[in-house]
Each structure stands twice: as C-alpha cells, then as structure tokens.
Amino acid sequence: MDKVIYLSNPTWANHKSIFAQLGIKTIDYPYYDKKTIGLDFDGFYKMLESAPEASVFLLHACAHNPTGVDPTREQWKKIAEVFTRRKLFAFFDCAYQGFASGDLDNDGWTVRYFAEQNIPLLVCQSFAKNAGLYGERIGALHVTGKDENEAKSILSQLSVLLRAEISNPPTFGARIVSHCVSIWIQG
Image (tube, rainbow, N blue to C red):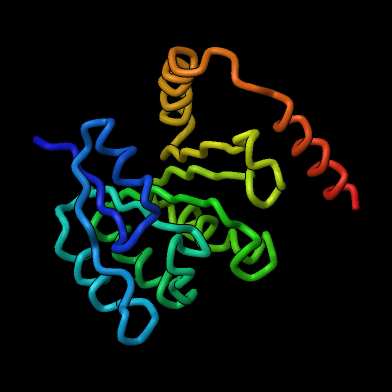
C-alpha cells in the first residue's frame, strides 16, 4: 500500500519535494478558486468526503501559503466534522501564526479547535518568521495522542528519530524565543 498525503492545490512549493524525498505520494485537493480569488470550499469538502478513511491531509493552520486564503471558522468546523466522522488525520503546517490576523491567539484557533475535537493531529510550527529569526530555523513539532500511553509511545519514537536525524540541535534561537515568550507571558 502506498503512503499518501493530500496537499492543497496550490501549496508551499517545498511540500511536494519533502514528501517525495520520504517516498510519500502526494495527491492534490482543490483549495483555491482563481475565479473568486477565494477558497474552493465545495471542492475541498468533496475531496475530504471521497478520500479513503484515515487519510492524511496537510492543512495550513492560518495564512495559507501561497494564497493567504483561509477557511472561515464555520468552514473549519465543517471540515473538523468530516475529519472526526471519517477518521482523517490532520497534519498542520503553522508557519505564519500572527500574520493572518495580527493576533497569535486568533491565528491559533484552528489547531486548538481540532485538538478540542480529539482529532488526531500533528503540527509543524515555525517561529522563524514571526520571531525574526529566519536563519535559526526555530520551530516545534506537536503531536496528539488519544491517551497518555499513546503520547508516551509517540514521544519515544520521535526521540529515536530526532537523535538519528539532528543529534544536537542548535539552541541559540530557541533560547531567544523562550526568553521573549517568558517576558510576554509575565506581561
């Protein structure tokens, strides 16, 4: 059985090459409607309904790259309902939090909503742009599990992969972001 991930059409140019390097087949789902310069919600929704159960869809959490077009909250709720009913897996790319609305909390709503609905998800989150540390490649990987045991299993596997892949990640940018966040939280 082929490994497959569904990507929006269009999507960030590197998504296809990243998955190709991993041997994962990509399938485009309708997203942008050039006629309306907006979201092709009907096409997107139909693809969610027709994809095999348990399929993986890469979603842009906010400020869709390259279109900037995002579903409304009501549309996200309908999308989440399909994910729940069809047991789809949400893979969020969150590279522009704070850039869509100017508010970090508002731009994080979609991921929080999916998590609240107990939809299995993975979030690749970049802080490089919004922290002004592009060359530092600052980010985080968030994965949800259905319970504590599954979360521990996921963490165990990620630890093995990370150790083999990067061994000792850079810390300078992460320390800057951590310091700034602690100041922001304290007010």
